[in-house]
Length: 224
Length: 112
Image 1 (cartoon, rainbow over the protein chains, first blue to last red):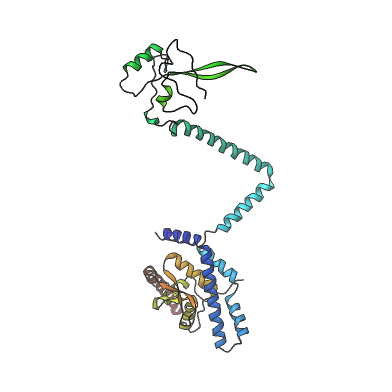
Image 2: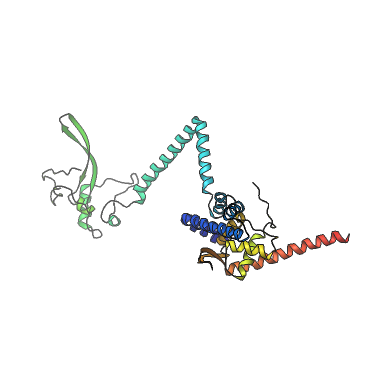
């Protein structure tokens, strides 16, 4: 209980350090002047009284330090330790370099792993209502994620009574002819309502229209 | 430079608390009071007094307030708190026990 109060009092002093120093200085000056007056009252010359008071009082800076060390957190010793550590590292650069590289790799790896976990597991998907997005797949004894056939998708869509909408996507790639030759570009084959199901709109142009995904309709693409 | 302390170790806090029991005083007043009451036997050095007062403040045994002296000067007056009063009781009891114990040891030597 006592140590907790001491800690918070110390914390208070830390934030009012300047005021603390000013008050202590004023207090000690007052003390010195009072002593001086008394010496004068005892018959000393003002000059001699001043020196006597200063002598009696001693080194003001040292006294202030002693009061500071009572209320302080010994921050100065922390700085000293840091300086010492830096000097030691400077003395053996090979060791220092090894330590720094290992720390850098360790921290880097931790950050990378956390970034992945954060994006994959902690952060919600970047869509308006991620808690209402569900991925539904077929599975079988051989495959955990069985590819869904197009007629099955149509049946699911027709018989759906649970979701606001059902849409499909399939990972694919296309060959893109450019001036420099043919390039392979990754793509996604999606049903017409895919983007409205996700709740996103194209930044430019228009979304797919219903009916544009049926067999025989003109091919349409959306660049991302 | 080592200063010779005229006080028994550990008694300064008790003396300060005791001095403040009568009335609030500033640092200089405390030193003066201790000197006078002890007929100049005990002198409190400024170098010990102010750190000790900070210690007491930290413990919450005294509280400090800037006020005007009778000569119209600003000074920090220290007042005994309830916790300080309790602490003074504890320290007095301990001190008396130690003095009594020392007395018993010394009287035993005399009798022998």
